Structure formats: C-alpha cells, structure tokens
Image (tube, rainbow, N blue to C red; front, side, top):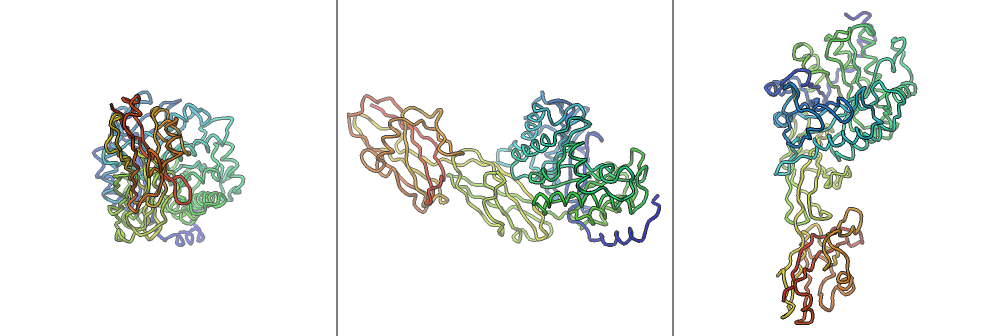
Length: 559
C-alpha cells in the first residue's frame, strides 16, 4: 500500500481530474491464446469504459529476419519464410476485430515488435525484412479498394537496441523514417523506452535527472533519440510502468515519474518543432516483477500522464484488466464516456484520370458527420492536397493511369484526427477511333483524349511511336510514359498541328477533353503495313508544371 500520501500529491490528483479523450488499451493475444471468440467482449469493454483505441500485438520478431504473426492471415499473402502464423493456435483475427471495433467507433492500431536481444537495429537485412512485414499489413487490398486490414495506425514496439552494445541511434531513426515512408499518411506510433533508472536513478527519490541527461542516456544505451524520431512519429508512447514494489511506494512518486515521462516527451517534440505531437504514456495495469498494481497506482499513473501535458494514456495490458474490474472503473473515471474519435471512410470513382473522393460514409458518435472536417492526401505521400474543410466530395487529377492509394483524415470538434486509406485505379485517358488505318486507301484516326474535369485548361501534346512501349521513358520524376521515343515521336512533336497530325497540341476543354486527328494519305506508306503505332500524350498546367501523362493505345497499320 502507499505510504506518505502527501497533501501536495493529493492536490496534484485534483488538478488532473479533467478526463481524457484519448484512452487506449493494449491487447496481447500471444499471451492469452485464441482470442477470436472474445472480440465481442473486447468491443463491449471499450464501449463501457470509454476506451477509444486498441493496440493489438500482431507481429513479434524472434530473431534475424524471422518472427511470429499473431493474427489470421486474412490477406493470404504472408510469406511462410517470414515465420509461423498463430503458433499454437493463439492470436486473433485482426480483420474481424477491426470490423467490430469500427462499428463501435473504436480505433485499432497493429503493434509490431521490431528487434530483440538476438537482432539489433544495425542488421540491415532484418530492417528490410521488417519493412516487408509492414507492407504486408498496409498494402493488402479488397476488390472494392478497402484495405484488408483497415488499421488506424501502426505501432512500433522494441524499436530500439535491446541489450546491445555499440549503439548507433541513427540506425533506429533511419528505420523509423523508412517505416514512415512505407505507410504514407497512416498514423505511426512508437513505444519509447522510459526506464525509471534513466529518469530517476540511482536514488529513485523523485529528484529527476535533467532532460539533457535523461535523453543522453536513452540515446547512448538504447538508440532512441526522441527529438530525431519526432518528425516521423505521430504518437509518442513512453513506457512508464510503475506499481507498488521495490522502487516506488508512494502516490506522489508514482505520479511524479509518469508525469516526468510525459513532460520530457512533450519537450522532445517541442524541441523538434512539433509541439502538437500526441503524447500518451503507457501505464502499468499488470502485476509482476515484484510490483503490484492497485487502483491507486493506476490513478497516480493516469493523473501523472495528464499533468505532464500528455494527451491521454494507454493501459498495459488488457488481459489483466479483465480480471480486475476496479481497474476498469479507475480508467473510466479519467475517460470521457463513449468512443470519441471520428470513424473516417470514403469511396472513390475514377472513370478517367480525374478521380472523385466522397467522404459521406464518415461517422462520429459525438457530433453530426456533416460537421466534421476532412482533408485528402491523394497519393498517400504524407503531403495533403486539400485543406481542412467541411465534409464534401473532392476531385484530383492522377499523374498517370494505374493503381493509386489515397488517404483521408477526419477531424472532430475536439481535435481528434483519424486516418483511413483506399486503393483506386485511375482510368484510361486515350481512345483511338478507329484503332486501325489502311495504308492503301489512307484515312483518318481520331486520337481522343479525356483526362476529366480536373484537367480542364491544361495543355497537352499527343505523341506517338512505332518502336514499342518498353522501356519507355520518364518525362519527369513520377511521370513514366510507356512509349519509346523514336523518329516518329520527334516528327509529330515538331509539327503537332499541321501536316499528318492536326490538333495534336492544345488545351483541354472544360470537361478535360480534346481530339487530335492523324491523317494518312493513300499508298505512300504501304511499306509500313502490319506495324503498330503507339499513342499517348503529355500534359502540363497553364503555368508549365507537369500535370499528367496518358496510357498507351495501339493503332494498327493495315494494307
């Protein structure tokens, strides 16, 4: 039991009574067994106690380039060489869990354990293996474009040196940066080492080591440079595990320690120029290692997290909470009732290179969906293409035909931001009418271009080739053209609106359409009969910036 519950500590508790809108629980199926039948129980507890987010341990590295997948392989894309799936039958069907949680407005974040004492962040092959695992979670799609695992984020656990020597913090930072690139605008979370020794050792008297000294210890011993990680990580989760036992036995010290972890995380974000980064300390809701969790240690930890400028808190772990109902009650005391984050969803339509994005399926339990703000990242490159604005359909011009991934964020009145993604296929922009031309009788072929309304007013140049589509060329970075440049290309480009090609250069009309006409006199090119001619186009904005390129269509020269 606590000793020395001071008036100061009690006052601190009162100051932190403002409940949190950001309450989470960590679920660890590999420690429990088969949790599939318990999905309704999990969702019900979230709804009852105001839990907004589930962190689900889904993959754990066990050694160099190997690990255990603790979820059902719903994507049917797991490489058996990467490790076993749900060994011993333990684990959970993540796809089913996400569907049940989203129906209740509960968010789901997949937790990936990255490194272990047998494999450190300086192992380049293992880092690449982990990126393949990340891709497994974020790059699997249903036919309707929805992700197989429609996650609200990816959380990195053990993203540090684990009992290693020759620690190089840049290896950790560079790995996290690579994960950031792979997941685009999806939310990235990281568990941060916050061992009490670095903060308060060796005396454990609440006279904490300075920010500089603590950060230096974490960098040199574990390779976690919080300030360097801040640009890539959306949610900092210091692992502030404390309970009655060998180190702290007073409410004041428990609270002060968790408060300090939140304060230092906030300082790191602020020093990195990102004061608004979310900070959610992970607090101890389990008994073990000589320490005993109680209602008061939970309260001290939660109030410490909130007093330390934390956005909320995460309980660690679910299976212990289930067996201790008063722990749930204590968490609910500091949680805004209900599941308070928006549930983003959108549909896409892409008949041409212009795609429309409809966010009307987005919901929120706290406010009307029409009052939510949304914004779109059309290429999921973490560069949002629209500002925050009331929920409304948006349109975008794809750079080229093919598969794309777009992200959308929804924001409610309390500042909660949730993210989702959809894959879509930008449609064809080139049609040939007819797709053949006689070299004997001659005639005309209409090269019909249709990029959609988002390309209206842009300039275009129709191009052609007789030497094929491979390897093609890259017009500008990110603008590949499946057409080989040859003498025909150069001839038509030099005279795009006279001679055998008319209207090959011009502006798209208000619907984003244009038609070039290729006219071939009779007989003179009979020797080319049997050859294909490949057509495409390039387009720039009125200001001269690259806008889009077309797909490639084939016209056959016949006798």
